[in-house]
Image 1 (cartoon, one colour):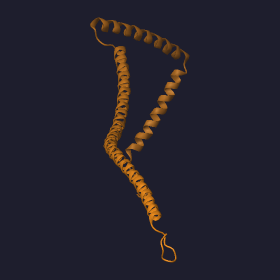
Image 2 (cartoon, rainbow, N blue to C red):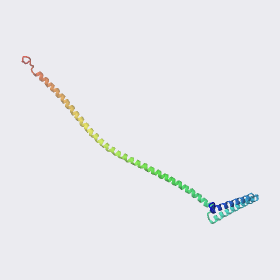
Image 3 (cartoon, rainbow, N blue to C red):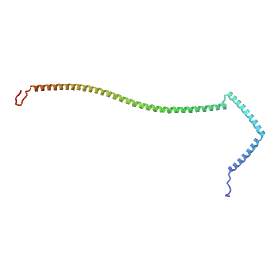
Length: 189
């Protein structure tokens, strides 16, 4: 018993379907190989297409009279819906791009504001330093004027000293001239 296969219903079903498919294909081949069948099927197809066209026209006319949507109307609405969705998606992408650009511009504006704050701070420092410099310049001018006055006074003192030296020299000369001259014998001339 070990050599026997177990019963598999799917295997028998598969064999049956293959056999049935082969018989149907042979039957269809016999029908389509017949010229009269081909002519009849062609005639039937033409009649059927005319009937469908007339049915479609009548259906559209009835739907128009009853104000009901037809298959074409529904397909047109579906096409418009797809177009609208595509346009909405394009607009969403543009909005996202605008949001990104606004974010980057706000960052740039923030950096400009920071730089402006630094410039204002530096300007205030420069203004403070300018006021200090003006004050120091005024003090320097006052010192310069005082130094000029001292220089002028020193010049006067130097002139006075020179005059005093000149007078001193003159007095010494006069004193030397009026002093008696001593000779070697202790006599004065």
